[in-house]
Image 1: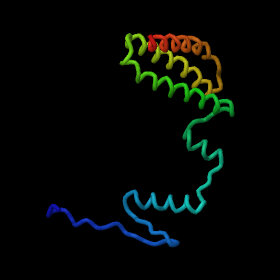
Image 2: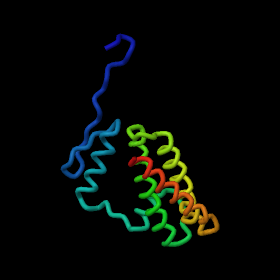
Image 3: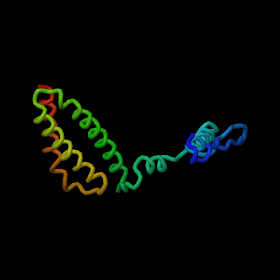
Length: 140
């Protein structure tokens, strides 16, 4: 240890209900959470889980939540596809088509899911067509 630094103190330990918890750092928080989860007291309603999943998102209705989940899965899938772009014969075309198609397709549905306004839906078929061409460029 460096002489100008104070000696390190071990974290405080305490026993609560037969379980030992460590205070300080992140360990005490983890142990406390584990204790509560193990006791079966960590239960959330579906609404609370939804708020945790999308903090700050305001969906106009249940359809908006479902649409957001579906688009999020498509977005994730096509983001993974972009990882294969450097290994294909035409990486510029495949990357450009997949990225622009994902942007147009997902943005239109994200907008509708969060606002309830379907006016921007005309971009979805264009984005979907670009995605199909991107997958074709990736495969060839």
